[in-house]
Image (cartoon, rainbow, N blue to C red; front, side, top):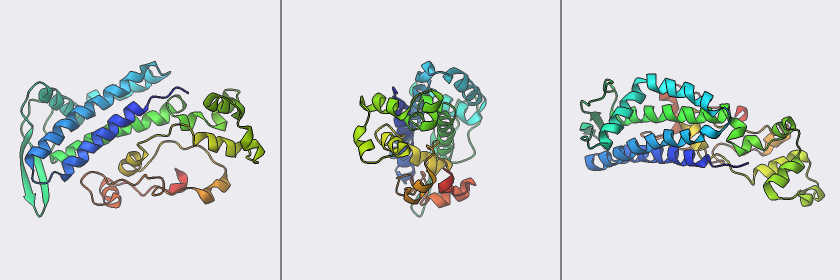
Length: 264
């Protein structure tokens, strides 16, 4: 499977990186404005990177509905206007900040956007916009699945639909059938699991899990594998959302119930 969707993942991770730095800038308005500038640029390139996959079967139909939703979303339109104005030399959109006990709250100044300035502080507005983009990228893993995700592509169920077998999958990945695994007593499920350990896996599940309370669709494993399954912590899925001291606090504010690990 030819895979280069990691370009999108890297842009998403980059956007969240600058969002996190905004949250840590404290009373340094200069630092906050620099990180905001970087956030505006990287958030835009995230959607541009996604649009490069129009060659993927079903992408145009899938993306058209999200493009329409973005064009109708006031938050998305505000940030598009903000980014365009900033790119063309517009002033920084920070009106000022309130600082209290080590915490900072920055407000937007009046902009030339066609959309009203968000009622929330800048960090909260940027986080909401990031989540909007993150939801779209997560949905791509759900709706486009096997066309962009090696973990969903290399499964017994998918190859059965294609009329192919684990032997075909091993040849596709390694160039040969893994006879050594067969000799060691690996059954078919174990061979599939071993194969998926050698191919690309989504690198931003920590962002999906922490900000959305969900991850990319996971391969179906035999029931007895659950005894040895890694927890979200062990898989590196726990990540502090920007501006929060714990994932639980963010989930509580966002109305997200703690995900059932075994249902992921």
